Image (cartoon, rainbow, N blue to C red; front, side, top):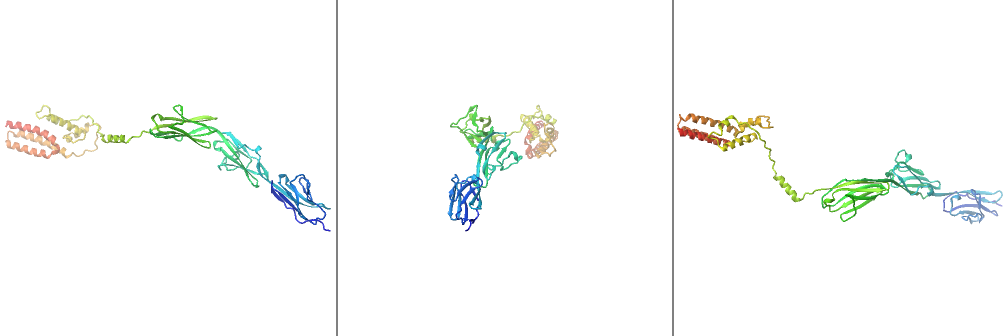
Length: 463
């Protein structure tokens, strides 16, 4: 008679909780003997031959043929992990052992983890906890949902992108730490799981004004803007002349919100003169209140006609040099020769002499430029010369004309008694030719000519 023997070993099985597991036991030449299954860890008899002994209905034996007894475990649970023994009831007994490993994907323990929303005041410390269980024990990793780096407490002020720990501690949190943090649990048993915890940092409103001075012409439209950082979200308002502004046909307020930043905008249409001034944008939440100013000023736009008129007035304006009253010294021979009591003195000569003297002092081309240049240079206020330029041609002509006149006058007076009238008129003719040649000094010469003519007439009368 042959004795029973095992043909194959029982495999070790790894199964995820909730699924089914099977352990085959193959015995050859069983004869009248029976096969039993036991859970060694529980010290529990499960089946005898094809009969289930345990009160747990998830266990049963399926006899596939005359030599195979397969233990089937439905809906495997974590406590089903352990050693299972297939035994043949004979003397001595023979048996084989198989192992069932039940793995469990990670699961969060909500009672021991932080809530989905955690609030803390700015400047305080905060601790986020994320506990998970599974088989094997899961690993916990913290990251920010937006992928931005952060600074954990135990990181020695190092900026990191993830932390492997059940707890995440942040010291002296600021508004930049606000956001969603992800707690990810993995244990190589799919699926991995994650928990989202939103950290809210409370702080009082802070207003930033991009443009504190805004200009616009009358009749146009303009938009004033303020940026408010606050959490919890603040109540926003606009004031002008101590009055709250509400939406109307000419003004409209609207807001653009992103995270804890809100952009306040005030649109003004068809501006009038009374609309210019200082506008106040304000914000208030449970932690405080603040405001800021935006000044709107008028831009004066010049019309086309006004521009033309202004251009015409500018083009017609002439800059005139400043006239200075200056005292000038007139040579003594001028005063002796053109005395107001002399018979040759006329009003035209007086005007000419005054114009000539002042003309020379101003750098003009009067008849006395040559004679009065040195005097005017000494008496003109603030006038300086770096060199003595040559006298112009008409000035030299004026000097020679004076000399000729003096010589001719002296010759005529001496020649009246010795010469005849023919020689007298010949001298006058030569003098006239010279005076005509010096056209640049015609005013001065003609004034002298009147004096000479009077003298000749007087001399002819005596002859």
